[in-house]
Length: 157
Image (cartoon, rainbow, N blue to C red; front, side, top):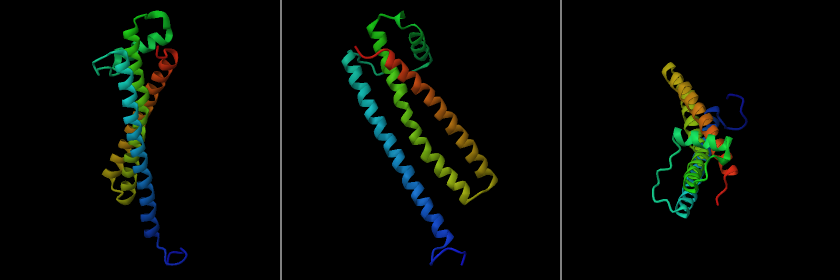
């Protein structure tokens, strides 16, 4: 007996803890997917309202730079089509915040795997994976804040 009340073993508690965390991680991932689908629908509605046929409004470096420029000086562009396209790119940036909810379960599952089988390669991979996930989350959050700021500054017309 390892000091736990009743017939509960530490292995049983560990399995239960893994199950609870895994269910929570899956719930977060599902919530993240639902958010992404809703955001994509909102972006499509805005795109159609602007009369844009193309879906290529991905927030690449040039668009991000243009968004930053318009945030610094909102009067720089009077072209409604360009502002509309930049709004769509900003909406995409903002919607990517939900991707962090999909990263978290992966990191949690990987972390639990490292505790179950703590070999040097597994721990090294887990640490690198979690660092990658944290850096990705920080970059996504930065872009989401840029998109949110642009949407506040340039509301739909």
